[in-house]
Image (cartoon, rainbow, N blue to C red; front, side, top):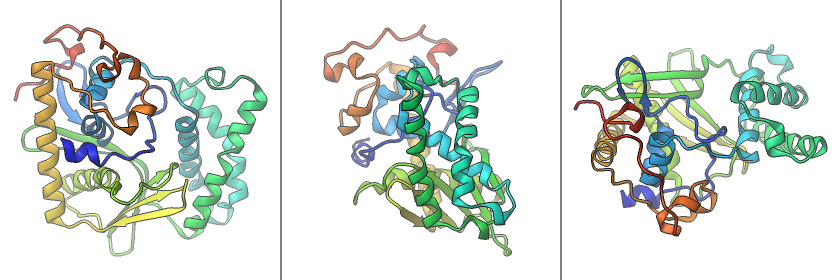
Length: 304
């Protein structure tokens, strides 16, 4: 796991709402389904103990202003394509921010009182999203685009029964039927040598789409609004087969951790953004006892 940890991005975009992920690593119900999303795979590669706190213990995390702002901007960019192309302007996008913020509060149960000391402070924060929209319009012209899908839930099941799932921000398709996977990042682009974690997420999506549809995405594109960078990558079949092997090996490591209860911390610069630092043994803390062994609440592995 050391290579994966070394590839961690210094400025992560935490999941708003305290680690809740629409593609949870364990699905509860009549039976336990082993499943993995790129967010949770990234958690385990960054720090197995972080994965445990989020997935096994399900410890709530404080929403950060940066993460919630990112969710609001994502909502605006999704809804922007509901408008006729001529109306997809920066001014119109900026005017959509208050409504998007209201929806995020309703859907993600994020209360303004948790984040801000006053209404004026909240308004100043919301205005700080406008430069991110300005960056987007400098990177792309949405009047020329006609996305095939937005906020697309993708899922496939590998031969060993592991379900891979996630949400793609945007899927473009040209006249020839070739697809491009687009993901928005409201943070800054990773520095040189730190691109692999971001590319792993995109390869993960490409793998799921390839296995689910039989069509290899032509291009993967990451738009970094915080620094106005575009990261593009064209995957091939060998690349995605290697990604699949990596995901299978990663899941085996997660299962071993479930079996043994050995969730080791991996200290890094990312710890400065972690809500769980006070309970991490790497910083003198004590993790809570694991939930009941062998129960669904503990995330007990499904039969191999």
